[in-house]
Length: 219
Image 1 (cartoon, one colour):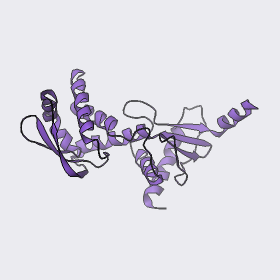
Image 2 (cartoon, helix red, strand yellow; image 1 turned 30 degrees about the vertical axis):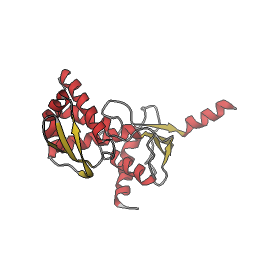
Image 3 (cartoon, rainbow, N blue to C red; image 1 turned 30 degrees about the horizontal axis):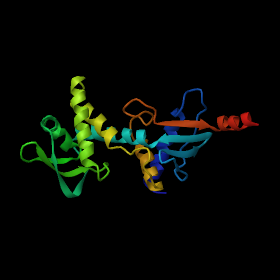
Image 4 (spheres, rainbow, N blue to C red; image 1 turned 120 degrees about the horizontal axis):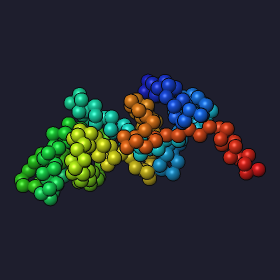
């Protein structure tokens, strides 16, 4: 077992007992050797005393949010260069909004250069961002930013929230085993693996006695 998996298990030992309400029994560590994807939306794994179900979208939102906040604090980011740079032509309002947040976008891993009036060149994107829908993500982030301005949300916070919501793994995305393990590992490396940045629950534990009760109720 490599060091990353070992560290993930050790972190899980301390966290998993908080997966559910206090009325449930304390549990042990997540078994990273046994992970499955349910309905291309949830990651499941047995734990001592039950079964853990992780929402892959909310888990990735938490990971991305913390990475963006870290990039703002440490001024470091990781990027992947596009094979073919994209020229983006924007409406005047979106172009103005993009110029406003351009330094922050570049800090989190985008490489965006201003061209002629109302257009930019996109050359790289954050490493955690999927390929193929870069322009859609950016346009949606600009819409989010415009709305955030009306609510007086700080720029860093609004960008972190928007990016984590728009660039995350979605329900319906198929993950292989190594991708699931990596997501679990990174989730338990965050400050709060139990809730996503939107305040929704990331994971649940189903105790074995609850599963047994369900079967017994059918008899």
